[in-house]
Image 1 (tube, helix red, strand yellow):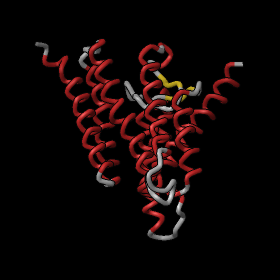
Image 2 (image 1 turned 45 degrees about the vertical axis):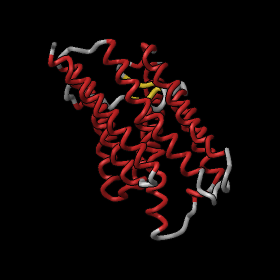
Image 3 (image 1 turned 120 degrees about the vertical axis):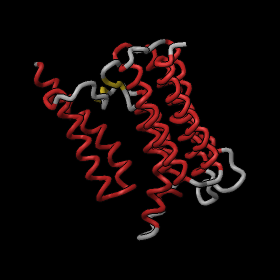
Image 4 (image 1 turned 180 degrees about the vertical axis):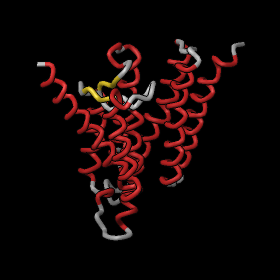
Length: 238
């Protein structure tokens, strides 16, 4: 057995394990721990691709394992988080079937992951919001709500229309024909990756000063910066 070939798969399995633990945390309404395990899973997800490229052992098995692991960590988990938010009696009341609408996010993530595997345009960039980014957005919502409830009662986490809009918007953005830049830096070159470096620098500053509130803002910034970059590149090519 080629040990090097199994290292990326090990990281993929760790991603899957973190997703499973996150599901248990969501079931117990421990949204903070679920968010941390999602972050850890995304960390492992990044390094499975990194080591696959470094050791030149990328193959169809790794691709399938990666998608299956992401389906749990970045598909089922955010859908379950939204289900739990919908299940709050202040949102839809008790004994309602409407909370199941939260799993629209899971359906959107599933389609996105399947399409990613066959879309040859997404080798160096993305078309639509990557599922890990969407998962960070969704899983951060209850933490952002708790953060603000210590200061002022915004109550947005209990607003059914806010949650409905976020649910369908996230499923749409994951599959929208919006080119987004990739954060995979293959070799350090400021000239080539200045956009990624700028984004990461701003994101770190936002995390330092805004803490958990920065997470959804960073995702929004990522999308807007990509759109702005697309406009600039389009004008430059004319």
